[in-house]
Amino acid sequence: MPPTAEAQLQVIRKTAKHKDDPAFQHPTKPIGKFYTREEAERIQREKGFVMVEDAGRGYRRVVPSPRPVKIIEIEVAGRDRHHHRRRRYPGDRGSGRHPLRGSCCN
Image (cartoon, rainbow, N blue to C red; front, side):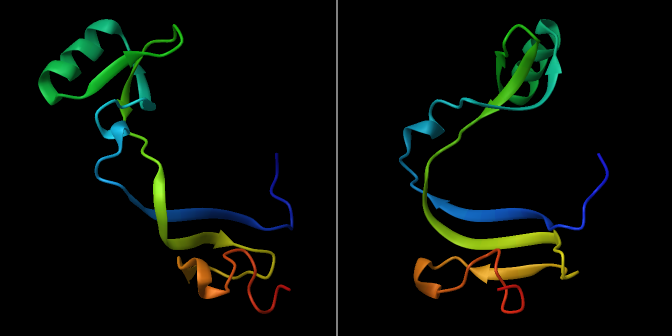
């Protein structure tokens, strides 16, 4: 599908997590490509990654997905309809600035 004239942005959040979040002990978020059982066992042995079967499609690495406790920074990457490039916004909730609305876009 070809791009449109509307905004096409990627929002990147940097967040703080609580160090005692149980998710760090029980990773569940699959990432990366699929591996055969043999490949997954070798990677798990050699690198210490946690590998699980993913819906019968193969094996994938899983990583922790703890809940964020605070947004530290929000970054918008890409170009919006006004051809702005990258913009950074403070993550404080009381900053009064919205990550997708600049002063010329309201």
